[in-house]
Image (tube, rainbow, N blue to C red; front, side):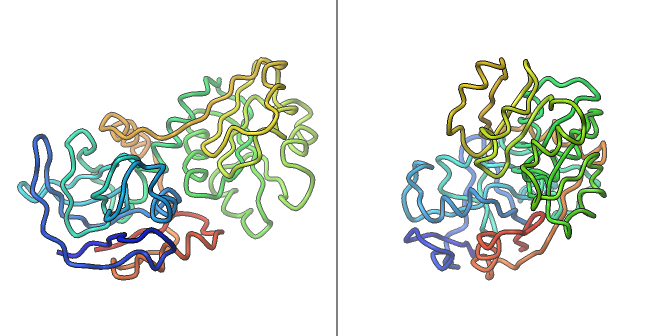
Amino acid sequence: MRAVVVEHPGGPDALTLVDVPRPEAGEDEVVVEVEAVGVNPVDLGNRADPSWAGISPPYVVGYELAGLVVDTGEPVWGLLPVQGTTCGAMAERVAVPRRYLALRPPELHPIVAAALPMAGCTALQVMQRMPLEAGSWVLVHGATGGVGHLLVQMARGLGLRVAAASRPDDRRRLDELGVDLWLDRSGPFPAAAAVRELGQELDAVVDLVGGQLEPSLPYVRVGGHAATIVDLTGDLELAIDRNIDLHGVLMRAGRDRLYELAAEVAAGVRPHITDTYPLERAADAHRRLEAGRVGGKLVITL
């Protein structure tokens, strides 16, 4: 069967399409015939440097998938751990521990389903870490990105009010997502601009791009909330002075997360698919993601 293998970590060209033996199910595993695989920033990081993930070459990246259980034909979706996984999803078949699989929501096409688990479960965990009441104002840095556009939908579903900044040409997308306050990213710092527009401090801020958490803290109310999926760097002492709880969120895979995500799907949460690539063009998908401004999700199709 075909698989995209990293034999020597590096740039996108390190992704090599090769023939490998078909996997066999181990204890409490099933073999899945892969239909689609989502592409995420962590794929790029593990492709270039596997040391953080605790793996060594050769290995296969790709951690969210949709497919069919080979023995039963059941449609499933799955989310593999980003640490310790050497046999990732970017292959025609993959042996997956049952604890990382769930039945796929029937309303989802495989391409759509493959674009949801990583970003969707990350967004879910961010929202679960911040106890916010309906009507609270949350500023989302990176609202048009893979995690951000799902988090905005979830926040709106909870009755939260969302502020977000973007370039003017992305404003329509944010309006369609239901953002309550659009801010021009080329103007003043978004947190400062939001407070000026609202006439009140923010209840929470979420940093999905990096480097935005620390400068946002002065604009979060006393007893507010802040979360990041990127870094917890800089001078964070103000969080203590203002009694702001800080959350560094790293997605943890598991079937229960997929069940929770299925409930969000039933409530109408959907990913924006920017583009799809066949397996043999996986390197092109990585180049596209590295170039930035994808504005949604990229998916590998098989």
